[in-house]
Length: 308
Ligand code: RIB
Ligand code: CA
Image (cartoon, protein in one colour):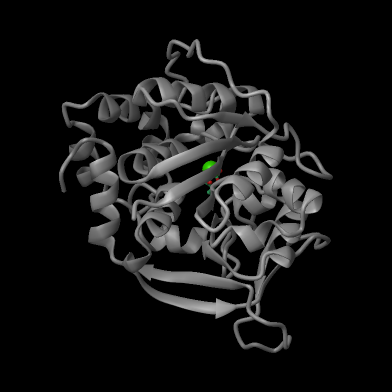
């Protein structure tokens, strides 16, 4: 059965690839939009532009413009000031929904009770609000796949914090402590499953509007990855989407308790994994430790109209 996805996202270049993958390989109930990579105005506009590109009638629900407690720095230095590589694309004429993302998450969880896979690709502000409004949400959502965290403390937005958790640690703490069992695709897994630069460029050369659009919006990020000496294109959200679309591509996982540091002077936003089960708390996360790279790349290439 083709999965039915509800995606919370802050497009964002890697978010865009994840959404292309979702459209190619699944059904999308809606896009909840968060602030994160760039401000909410841009992330909503980028989501609407993707709907234009796909010619898809996907509802886009604006969410929270700010983290729950403390302000945070965006990732415009990676994704561009507009979140899509500053290509100056022609904005969509579509309108976003008037319903808040947190309320849309709750409504769609009732309308599709037992059928949704919730994929969280952004700071968890919208999902945290939804949980505070209705703590029974997890009972209606069979799978929650979260892109976030750094399971062994190797962050990307600070020494110890990954961006999605680090941008709104309080929201992540609410989600991690309220959801009985979620699947976690962290930054360190993303580093282990980089997309080879040359293979990526071959996919982006496909004669397909999706490939052309993604080649344009990802040019800045791909350059950033090369300049930083990274092993390839680090597409965290695409990796999380691959796990959501094809759980069978997970080749290794660890069930552990994961918490979020809120107060540490050096470690605020860090995901603290109880690897040795010292804390006596029930595991709340299935931490993905390895995936089948070929199956991951086939899903990415297919979303761009390319073949591996
Ligand atoms: O750390 C990677 C995450 O932060 C991804 O979701 C990326 O889009 C950024 O939001
Ligand atoms: Ca994201």
